[in-house]
Image (cartoon, rainbow, N blue to C red; front, top):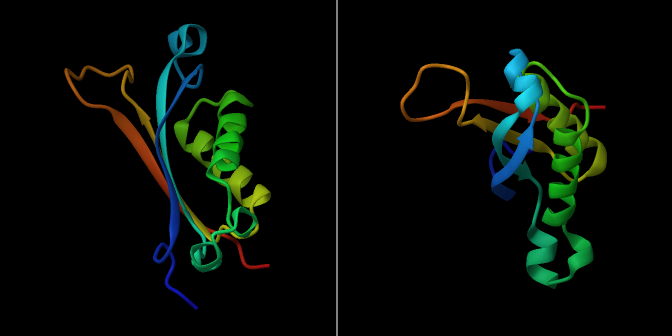
Length: 128
């Protein structure tokens, strides 16, 4: 068995969304920008050798799952938003064995001149 978070992966970076997640009333009513980075651990040997679309996980379909999770239930914490994304990807794609999801909040309501607040979750598919 391979080590978690190593090996082949599908990567999506800088997925931009506008949402109303957050604790403060301004965040919930005015909204703000969020950026999501995602790495999904999946064996890419077969599509690499066969060049057949049906042998891989579609990154377009991963994006659709991330978008649905982001636009679904409003949450107070971006940690909960990240977990919703993880749960959605694991539910939709049996071949994904691990996920690293980072959610960046460049306009977090804290006094910073430059930068962003972010969280990163590392999750392995639960063993059945």
